Image (cartoon, rainbow, N blue to C red; front, side, top):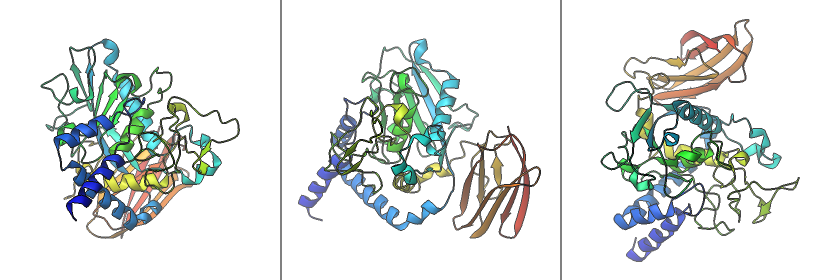
Length: 416
C-alpha cells in the first residue's frame, strides 16, 4: 500500500469514527478521538485495520444469529463525587445495570412500542453485565468504588487516574470500567471503541445526572449507558461518519436505515405517520440515536453481529475474566457446569467448559412436569455459555434437565 493511499485511508477512518458531537446531549467523542490521533500518529491506521477484521468476521459468522448464547461481562463502576448528590447510591447503580441488561436482552418493558415495520429486526444481543464480585487484587468487592474529589466538575480526561481527581481503571482486559462524575461538558456520555484508547483509559464515562434511572427531563431511563456500551462494542450512530446526520453515510450495518435527522432532544410526534428520510422510514427508536430515552427501544440483528464481532474479537479477553464469580465461568480444569443464580428472578445462566465438540440439550419443566423451555445445539467451542430468559415464568420450583453428550444432570431451580 503506497503512502498516498494510506494517508487517504487514515483520513477516511478519522471521519468514519468521528461519530459523536460535543454539542449533543449523549456523546462526546470527536474531540477525544482527534486528541488521541494527534498523540499517536499510527492510531488511525490500527483502527482501520481492526475495522477490516470486524467486517471480515461478520461475513464469516452470520449464522451466529441463529444461536442463543449468553456472554457475561464484569463491570466496575467508579463513582467520583464532591457533593452528596454526585455520590449516587448502590441501589441506583444496581438498577442501572438491571436496565442495561433488559435493553441488551430485548426484555425492556417498552419493546412493544417498536413500529411494526421494524419488529422483525429486533435482536437480543446475548451480552449481559454484572457488577464484579472479585476485585483486581482478588478480594471480594461490590463492583463499586467511591472517590471523593475536591473539584466542582471534571473533564472526561480527568476521571481516569487516582493521581489526579479520578480513579485508576481496573484491568481493562477483565473489566468494563465505567466512571460516573460531574462532567464539565454537561449531561453527556462517552464510550471508547476497542483499541481507541490506551488501556488505562478504555471504558465508559457518564455524567452522574444521566446515569441509570434519574430525574433528567429527557435522558432519565439509563439509556445513555445503553448507548455508550454500544460504542464500547464498536457500534456507530445510524448516520455513520458524518458530524451531522444526512443521507450520504450510514453505520455500515444493512438493517439500520440511513437517516438525515439524529432526533436529538426530542421524540418524534408521529401521529400515526412514521418519520421518513433518505427513501425509508427512520429508525428513531434505535438505541444508537439521540432520541429521548422514552423513545429508544431496540438494537437490530445487524447491530448484534457487529457487537459480537467486537466481543469475540478485540474484546475477547473479557470472556476469560472470573470477576463475576456468582454467574461466571467455571474452573476449566475441573469442567464444572455452573447453573444459576439460584434462586433467580428469572434469568438463568449456564456456563461450562467442554473437552470436545458436544451435543447439548436443555429442558426446563415446572414441578408438575410441564415443559416450558427447550434448547438444543451442537457446541463446537471450548467454552459454552447460554442464557435462559425465564422472567415471564411464574414463581416456584422448576426442574432443569441438562444433557451434554452422553452425560445428563438434573437441577432444581427456584424462580422467586
